[in-house]
Length: 587
Image (cartoon, helix red, strand yellow):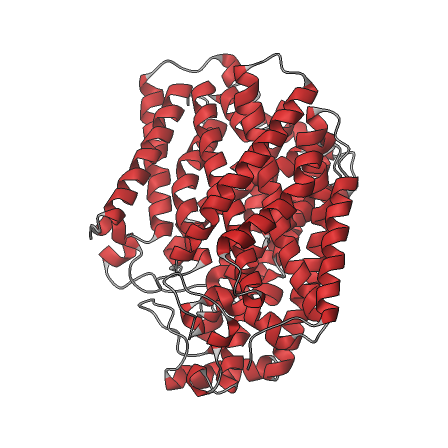
């Protein structure tokens, strides 16, 4: 197997796509006001909201991460996907109405209205840092993984700069409208490409039954890929199970260090929903799309539609990674002729990857180049790079919104609408530079998914605790929220210092999903105690920003005039039923 290369047809397909998508993004750049630039004029219908949410979430980094961990027999990575459907139902019921009625531009702005400006500044800064370190940098990193297979002589820095400039080409002038218009096209192409890879992969290995038989055979022989966990699956049923053990002792159970090292069932129950809640209900990167909905119903329908789109991800993005186990085994294994080094996948320490288990991020690119015929390779590769551009352009826009509306407006309130747009454009250019500098650092981590979840496990818990407590407890005040956010940051810094000093103790040993839950509880308790010991919040900080039972009656009356199929409650019930049937099948 020689080094991978593209045919002339593939190169033409990719070039035509790149020109068309950038051109369409520039054509959609019609923003004349700050509301049009940052929120697409608040005129998005539910299909656009849903597809945009899905496209922004299922970016190239997620796609590569899902397939990579599935190859390591960590099929339970899909738990993050189906949990999104449940979280979006919760979001549509409790949080979205307050977000849209408040007419805010950003999530930190909402936090200020519920608490005070201190919480706004902190959350805005943390979100900007998270956008650069998580979404933007990881998207650019995936682009380097793909393009280095084709152009091994190009440096990581050069590839990152090229991709960042391409994504920023239409984001800077067009804002959210250009981002969303291109996302819809890219989402369709991404799904079609994933379906093609799934089809060809299963056709190559002989179908579903052959995959099951192969997993059972490899499990019995002890040759399944080593995922680095204490618990190793031994047959197809265990490989495909979404629920794994948590540990045999109380210490292992509480810390999540026993059983399955990837996602013990305790982590699935306690920590994963909190990460999902932050990502879908608090993260400016995602919520900004719903803030652009034309009304509450379209916002809710769009959120639920995005949840529905997340469910097929198991079949078109996760299971191909599992099927790759059988494909490599059928090719004679790594040691018998399947030369992964010929993929030109470079390791951080130098040299090339010799075994896919050492570079799981190469699983999806390997399937792409091995399975698809000429022409289709270029189309699917364009779709993968399109997903990267979609994610990167979206984070550029959301972060520039935060800088403009949470800092520039506060510093100089008399800025005109056009001046705000210009600040947003300049901010985007600065973020492009920062993301380019950080993206190469992701190579230091063994798995892209590991990197994403590690960073998120520190950012999410303090913010989620502030939002949830503030929504359901009227006594929570600004001082309590701010102290709890700072406390969460202090814990995160302590952890990073311990890791830096190679301290070996229960805190650094703890599974990140358990740490997510304990940090959430800790920050919630700090908020509760400080709020109880300090003056109650002013009425304007509570009225209109906290949930109460009377809202159910008011909402029921509003929904009574709609046909049943437009009632988001009925839609939510159907979504939950479909979700739990799917999860139950793979339980």
